[in-house]
Amino acid sequence: MSSQPPHSTLLIPGPVEFDDAVLQSMGHYSEPHTGPPFVACFSETLTMLRKLFQTTDPASQPFVISGSGTLGWDQIAANLAERGDEVLVLHTGYFADSFADCFETYGVKATQLKAPIGDRPQLPEIEKALKEKKYKLITVTHVDTSTGVLSEIEELAKLVHRVSPETLIIVDGVCSVGCEDIKFDEWKLDAVITASQKAIGCPAGLSIVMASGRAIETFKSRKTPPSSYFGSWKNWLPIMQNYEAKKASYFATPSPQLIHALHTALTQITSRPLSERFAAHRNASLKVKKTVNDLGLKQIATKPENQANGMTAMYLPEGVTPPEFLPNLLKRGVIFAAGLHKEIATKYVRFGHMGVSVTDPNRDDIDKALEALKSGLSDVGYKA
Image 1 (cartoon, one colour):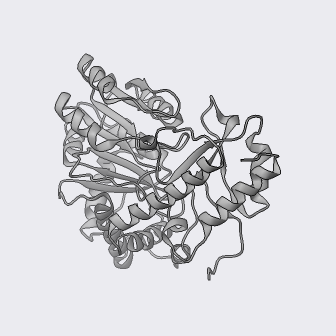
Image 2 (image 1 turned 45 degrees about the vertical axis):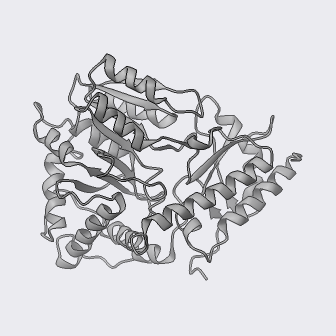
Image 3 (image 1 turned 90 degrees about the horizontal axis):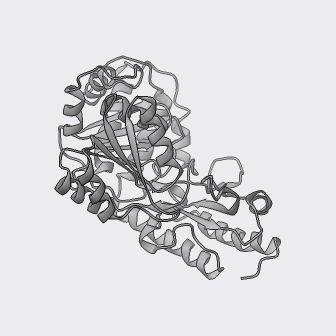
């Protein structure tokens, strides 16, 4: 039995439900962020992140900085691109627009390659774009939280290395790290950004980045200083290297409680083979999507290969809006998210199925949500 107070089950695409032990870690007593116990905790946390991202390359570098996942965009734009550089942003939803906007804020020229809503840019058109212009970076949202579209990273990386090997490959993994397979070394990725509050299963407040040795060298060879102060790797790189080496270091005060919670979450994740974790998410996703299909509802991502394993975005019946539908779930103790993509926001809802709700066999979150979905549809007069 959970020690948490009774509450509605949070099944949005992040934040997610948290394990009791993770929340208990947030209650850790106050301690100095340069003291040996915390330094050891932070060091182990960075080491476990290497396992999660599947990198053993000593040249790669994890960063954990206080902030939301959005800070990851700033880190990439401020440290790996310079004013006037060209970047190619693959668009599968709302978050590509935002990443592009972030680049433009730093004076970086962002070209978006857009797919129809629910789809992703195809490899031939990406190849064509890469051959037409030299891009410093290419970015891809692994799972766009606004549409539930899953991008294929491995084949994309192979294409980029073949056609434009000097282009750095940047993955927005905010809604994928922890529930989708990411082989950082094997796929030769240059940076993956994520956040603590989604599939990793830690409270919000930590921006997490894994950077390759090539990315670090690109940063070190900049012609101009990083265009951010707080997000500058000039400030953070020695801090992260020192903490991982169990040496106290200081640039800006971290949140010891959040680091302890992340340490607990990563300890749980790395205590079993990652393949088992990804399979659990895949199986839960198949169960959810079968129910959605059986109910006659349409997903935003219509092609199976485009469908994420940690969330499902589904259109509501014609004429039904999220404000009308979501309270029907809430009265049954289930919380879904409304639509986010500005062109279709009033037509769909989003169901997050990731983290402890999927991996803890003692929880019935997914079954409870599917029953609430059926009943909530019935409440609005829908018959499958």
